[in-house]
Structures are given as structure tokens and as C-alpha cells.
Image 1: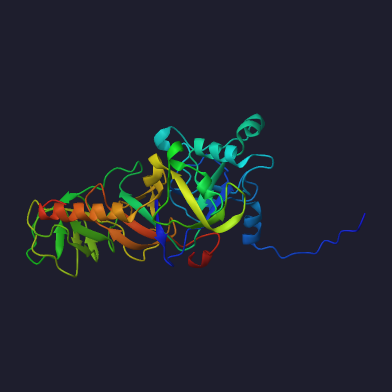
Image 2: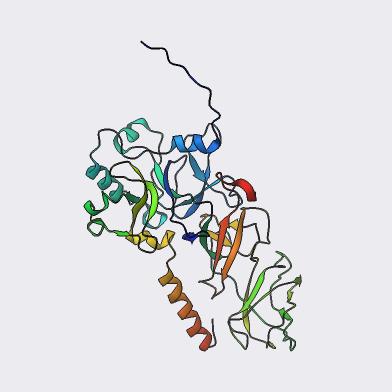
Length: 120
Length: 238
């Protein structure tokens, strides 16, 4: 057995936190089953360009984020860190965490209308 | 709170971290202290110190019956897995927070002009703007000749808010709102659910984040836009 040389490292807080990050699906899990579990729990699902076409968000009540179509993260399908992932959110809770331009546009129109009516 | 975008215009970076407690959707999460069970914990009503970002997992939100799963029970973890949550971690992320009053997060309280001011430099209402102090905050009208107009409050005394830039003359019965919110201000207090910002509390150094924009609408649909200034990744603004 060969000797192992341990080299002292100056880990930063970022290194430590990055190393602790959840790495994706557990060993031995099939991607489809793991993603089905995430969908059942209404969690955010990240899929890389190779995996995203295999997922049908509408069937599990999810929507693909369209205003920011690309995000950086670890693919829930193949556990690869990708800078061009798609992200999917549970449709019913979407507006709890996302403010979209269309929503703000509607609010602005409503505001203008209410001002014209004299009561904001 | 909602994710609105980033200052740099870059794509969101989403990481999944282990929970140290039951988590809810749309709140700022913090790096955990030493010896805590996971990697992130909830913020508090008065602290965003060492923030990791915005928790966006929609799993079992309050709206549908409870927090996302967190457990230390071995059998549960064996069957269901550990509690994890997705977090947008960009240090320059812009968040959008609903303005509310009170710990439970009710609508902003509006007030009514009881003494008119022809010079438009004061708003004299029925409730105190000096305690809690709304000085340096914003005042905007909901009705009357100034409907939709807003000004910065430059001093307060009892029920009178004073501005330097005048409104048009106001009249008794005009309604208005005020908020302890201003561009660049770095101190907030959150409601108990941690997902909305209280504007009835004087500016403090509580939750460290800077206001970059205000959407001043009615009592139920006004918002602040902010960036976090005390993040675990970039604690420069702390």
C-alpha cells in the first residue's frame, strides 16, 4: 500500500461551504425517480441542457422559468455542475419567490388606472 | 420575498443546501453557526448576518400546510432523505419585498390629512410619525390632488411629517401613506414570517440590506427592492 501524503491546505470559508453543498441525487438512485421525488416535494428542479428535454414539467404541475431561462447549478438528472441549466418551479407557489416583468407591468397599469380614478 | 434579478444581469446561481431547521419559502437564509446540524438556517426578524441568499424551494410552503422537511430522526431520513433546500446565492441579487406593518404583516396603515397645508410642505395626520420615527422615509398620497406623488420626509414632529420638496396644496381628508424606507438605507425589520418588510419600524441597523428601489402603490401592493449587504460570500457591506 502506497503512503498518502497530506498537504496542509488554507481552506477558505467559501471552500468549506462549497464542499458541504448537496451534490445531487444519492448514489444508486435512478435520475427519473429522484426527480419525481423532488417534484412530489415541490422542490426546485435544475436540469442541464442534456437532461432538460426528458422532463415534462406540466405533468407534475411545474413551470419552466422563462424570464431567466438559464441558471447555474448542479443538474438533478446527471449531477453535473452546468452554467446553462434550466430551472423549474412548482407553479402554484411560483409567485412566492419570483417577481416577473409581466406581474410588475400589470401592477403599474393598475396603478395608473387607480390614479386616474383619484384613489391609489 | 421574490427574486427579481441581479445588479449585473447575470444568470441566477442556485445551490442546494442542507437545512438546520424547518424552512419556509421566500425568506433569506443564513449560514449556520458552528455545531449547527446543517448548512443553512432561517434569518430572524432583525438579522440577515452571514446571509446565503433567497430560499426558493416551494416544498410544502406555509400556503399548503407547512415548512419543508427537516428532521433528525434516523428512520425518517432513511426513507425520505435529509432536508435540503434550493437557494439563489448571487451576492448581487435583487429581492422584492412586500411592505407591511405589524409583526403579523398586515396592510400598510394609511392616514388622513386633518390640517391642510397650502404650501404642500407638511402632512398633518392623525397618528404619530415621530414615534416610531419616519424621518428620512417616504410619504406618498393615495387620494386628493397629490394622488400618486411621493416625497422624502426630512423631519418629523408628533403627527406632522415635513418635506423640503413641496407637494401641491393638500386638503383635509386626503389620504396618504408613509414608510421608513429610503434608497440606500441599510436596516430593516421583518415580519414574524420573515417574508415581508415592516415599514412601521424606524430605520435601524437590524437586517442588513440596502434599498435600491421603491414601488409605492396602495396599502396592500407596495414593494421595496433591495440587495443583501451582509452575505457569507461577500461581507463587504456589513
